[in-house]
Length: 360
Ligand code: SF4
Ligand code: FES
Image (cartoon, rainbow, N blue to C red; front, side):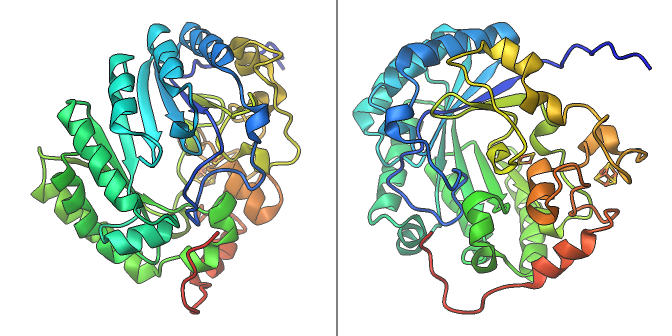
């Protein structure tokens, strides 16, 4: 057998998790359960180096994210560094913590795109889900300023049991705010959402209605707004090619500098992550054990190993496979061909019917 390692594919996107700090407390937050403290956060110069190394590696786009990136006092300098490195810059924000003045400075520094998360179209429910009074009003105000500056705006609408019936209203809100794109992002069950799964899970009927609604709205608003929507994993027949395949398209840098193949990779205990404080991004991408672990298809077990879809979905999500089976090499149980698929079908039916509690 030829053991010559193949050259790794090149990444296109970098998720820069600038901080885990955030004023909101959404029950499905994608932050890990153990947060990086402020004292461990990378400084401005290190982020600037990371962006230069990312551009040299082939990355085209950086998502400036968190936590809430507005919690970083040097967000404008960081954004300028990403822009100066030649990257397309997308700010992913809750809008709480970004003033009109800061947005203006970000715009002057080369910010290309803004994505604002909105918890619901009803202000009171939105604030309740976010755990922050007045959050909705601040989101609407910042969205107006984004549009006034003629920056492209995406609304990120995270859908779950408490708001899944509001899909049509959320799209109407995105249109009203002047967004060019809305993401109907059903909660997927990692991190905090996994912990709160029984309270967040919609019914199969709710999901089916939401899918039909999205199809109708796409037709109705064609040319006015792009509607992106992905079915919640637990109700799909096949898994998604999570992160476009492990170590193929993107990489995440955590607030303290660890480089992950996906945002939830730290939930897999067997993985070792290299840090940008000790290694270049290219070295990490090509050689770090975490990126090598599930790149390509050699690591696969049956039924993925001999499945014709192996190079399309790469066996699904490694973090989900680990969370549900305890084996990160297992076929994602979302796949109906997985010998453990019954697990997902059972979980999809388990819900807490007690009054919804929005706290983490
Ligand atoms: Fe994808 Fe594996 Fe299912 Fe085939 S068996 S469809 S490769 S997850
Ligand atoms: Fe980690 Fe899917 S979230 S591979």
